[in-house]
Length: 307
Image (cartoon, rainbow, N blue to C red; front, side, top):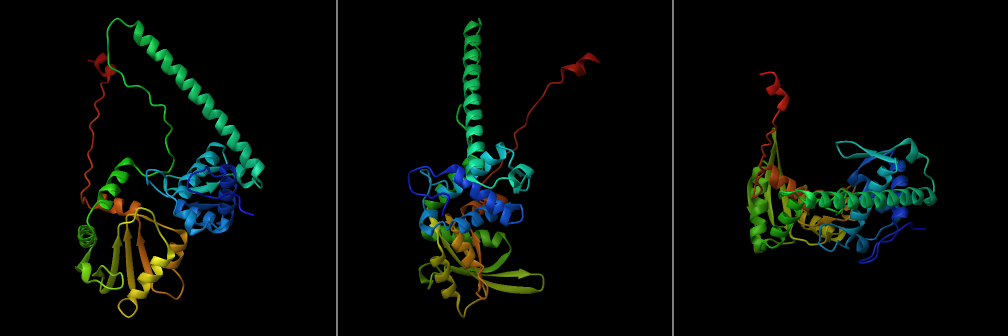
């Protein structure tokens, strides 16, 4: 029996997702990366590709991954999970003892109550601050404290903006962007086939690793939703007799079935670059993305006491 279901509009059973997360971590040996954990939950629960294709209202990502991130956050707040700086999540002693949905519902209710109390305290603090401001004789600028909660494990705003820009690009322009990125990554003889490409192959390049060279065919598509296993199988079919490696680049998201199909035993290996990783690669290679270091100046008043 499934513990949760995903549809286009309603909220899933979060305590059920929390229990599924704990059981997935237990099966994975007690620790896992976010991708490993999400894929294991999806596999254990039998989440369909149709469910994985449902996106958040702002197209920031699949609904199932969004709510699974909230499940992890609730479990962490309840002391059942912990995560490292490298993004590895692990069961705690408390989490290892969770065996039923009653336990996760208890954590959910506890954290929800804490959030209500924290929001109440925040509102009171804001009222006090505004009252103090009215009592002051002189005006001074101040920033209003935001009351919106942060979304856990979601992509940064710059990534959403970058993905919107790429989704609006013409197909041939996006292919040229992929060509430039591959060259920056060390590929040579990168050729974009454009409309002349057949079988879903958009281009080909050669990757040199030490003394060995690999010919890699790639497909680059602008997707707003998810890429399923069918697209991976079709691309692999187009590779038959051409090369031993394939690369699929998209602005969208790969379903867990697509990820499994890409690394299926006995089949040609296909590397996957989704929208999240594509943004990171563009940033790392400084292609259309600039980073700025902001200088912060602090005055050490105690230093002047010794002058």
